[in-house]
Image (tube, rainbow, N blue to C red):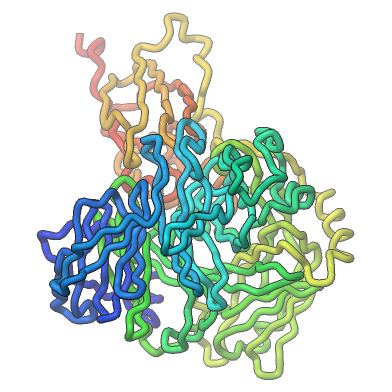
Length: 637
């Protein structure tokens, strides 16, 4: 796909000197069109002539504590360190900061997960900062205001703005200056998403409510007691608690990305046909996604689409250059990504060619209106069978992430093409408020025969214009045909490959017990182990990490094949535990929650080297080990 996308949007490297470890935490241009880059190693670099082949690097500042954002305003750079909002100024014009002002500081508990992001400047000059929750087997607000978005003025006055955040790595403004933040999957967060926030909103994670009783808090109608461990659907909970802000757009986990990051509005037509929409980065999948927004019943909702993959590392930050190219800052240490480089800086440049895409997807009372970038083949686009739609949602609970649940197929009964061929109105039975609606197009080309670059989109339907109406009847009929219920983490299709109780004929127990845990950076803590052919083996996998993992033992040389097949499972992946139905999968655990463990039992296969790998999408690139089977010592005797 990256090769097809490159025809329309080209990725160009910004050269980095060998002496610079540019693990990007933030990027921003100053008023001299120099690119400032904050690194996770505590440095700020100024890059002169970043558009050319020989950019010049100057270290502007150093000694900072993991800055993960950067802004420029009125002659100074601003960044968040772990515990403060810092203003940095070059007062003597030598290209190096010599004045550091603490605008505002907050407490830390010392937990590794207490990251800080910002500031994002608002049109009036105020700044927004977001603070991560800590992690101790679940998200916790271990120090004051963590899990919150804070509004801070230039003179250091702080006002809590919104709560309910877990890991709000991305914050940005849309084309109208409205505030959005990006959230990552975790406990209480079924999947990645972006959410529009107003002052006083609650975005979903209850741990931040530890501070709701403080005098400055704008939230006085929610407490931790309002949140049992499992609630059901966030949409239903929000109906009873108006303070709860529903996600504006869900980015279905592994189907679109796995770790949403930068948010940036497209404000100029010189970047292609998507002016007014948002670009959203993904760190784990090294890609940029696109989001179309609209207001229905006074609230933002909309659709997300693939846009451009193939970046060299994990995308964390983006910024517009003066030439309307998109600068993309990347890092992957500790957060592995599909892009193999440990860090990177690249530009995305529109080639001037317009791709054939779904430009917009708008909700209607009876379905959706699709707008395309080019006129469609009328005969193809008028066939309802060319459109497949499935609705689904996620569980709202304390467990880490959520499988896809309550999945139903919606029937597209009619497709009407507009006179100019650029719009198609779909009539759809069974739309559901509070659900994500996946749309897949098949066999539709432009009038000139060009294929759709990305025949896929996901619309988050919080409100059906004009109300649900007859859709409720269709949904009731659909639900009679589908077994509904709360699903757990999946475990493949063949239970003989995941035997979790000791076989009855193992009277003396296993011959060998192997215990494998995790360590930071998507790694198993045991990279290899050796067993004898034909031995009775017990493998205990202990997921001590803060995210979902499994352990899959494969045939020799097939780890990449199995990992890729897991990524391709699509909407069914979560209910299968991302275990593909392949003969190359020999033995496996289920998909494991953080701080849980599982034992599996099997008889060692013939002599050979058998890779084991985590097949949660994207993890297989780096999270793997080797089971080495050797000849039996008993046989030798």
